[in-house]
Image (tube, rainbow, N blue to C red; front, top):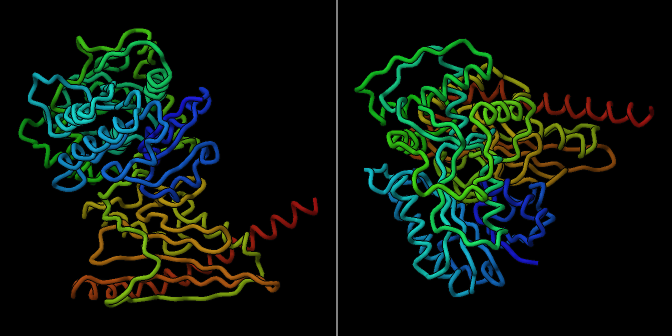
Length: 486
């Protein structure tokens, strides 16, 4: 069986590519900086997972690989993100050449090299060139706006249109683009990986509709059954101001929003480099792509989201079981319940998203709005139905998950310090003891003032949250017993 190496498998596109590749008869190896993040993926048992980084030693990852799929993107993650993208790509290409990899498939961005491209699109194109330095054949698929439930572009579009019936917009809303559905992107990637046909070095892909961003917003409103949105164009609205507004209204963080907004200044439509018809296939139109994305969002069938990737926009830090050194402030509460560890863990792991936090919901909402104003994610990201390590959960990230034993969250909200929230379970014949621990490592005086300033609210929120978890666990236990008797 041929073998494909998929990078970015914890991200939006990569997480959806694995299953169809396996179905096509390929062995799939996934490269991940944190393999534990992939443990909860639907396809985890069908693939080989290796630890590694695109910029590090890739000897093990590249061994016996026929085709490597490069889906790594560092857009807006620090001041040197473009340089890091290119260094990683050059390293990846060299290791692929040394291992005898036959082809590298790379998903890049549309845009003419003759135009004055945004930093984002320039870096996308440069990454393609760096991948080829080692001598391996590179097929660069260039796409524009990707429409699909959970994609950064779709979430930005969705929130802007649904939240704002009247929008003050910059000139870029009139720039033309050629959006493509995520399902069609995946189909094209699979064909590119599995084909024995000759492929162009650059293949532009897009849907059949060429529209402006304003027309795309109008189409979304129609498909979603919303009233017509009114746009007021203001020529002096800069990408910086626009990105801050996007960061406030949508789940897309400001650094990422800025790069996306700046890229919208460039026309991104298919040109002479369009993919051959057999490769492009018959992609669906914008209206159908939006309809499918909305339907998936409404029923919660969103297998991957852009926030699942290893982003640094929300000030994530490496997993660290315990903080060593420095001041650590704690709120620790322990309760014993006759409910089983399974029921208690089910209650704990249901927290957040539409379910809420069991207590002080209005305080959580206020904190979420404050976080948005400061450029954080707020409560807009929600959660997956089934949590796994690395998943976003409102303005937290799942850092450790051991069924019936422990759930630990790391805060990605804007804070003058680092915060974690942990539930530890200890079960015996009498029931389950649950220890809820809030830890905060303050930065400077401001961090200490913050902790003591919110401490009065902790006395209301944390006991109520723990009591709500216990009540839910007991409800689940009673439901299980009733179902069993029936």
